[in-house]
Length: 140
Image 1 (tube, one colour):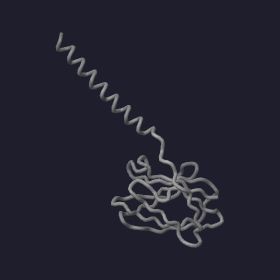
Image 2 (cartoon, helix red, strand yellow):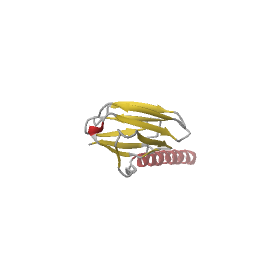
Image 3 (spheres, one colour):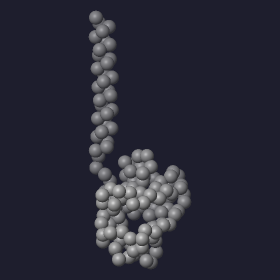
Image 4 (cartoon, helix red, strand yellow):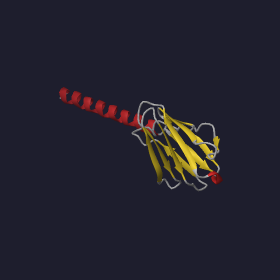
């Protein structure tokens, strides 16, 4: 009888431990997102919009572009030692484009036009967005 009680106590402790771990994972996912950085205004006809892809962040991560300045040219520079990408979503959460960038390399590309909306961009590599690698592109 004592053996059964100890066995039951062990099961209860394991169950409580699992619940605690799950609660910690859930609570971590509910944490507030990092705030957007300072707003950067760009005039793409002068030069490409430079975005640095760091370890789990974009610099800058909050861009404002004037709509009448299209087409928009972007230069992405990956300064990290891991693959990153730039995935751009429209307001309906549809992927507009996705550009992969190798470690320590840069790419340049052009988008012909965007409507006056707020767009989200992020890195779709595993857990990168969760760790804070996202930003906002506002076309005004």
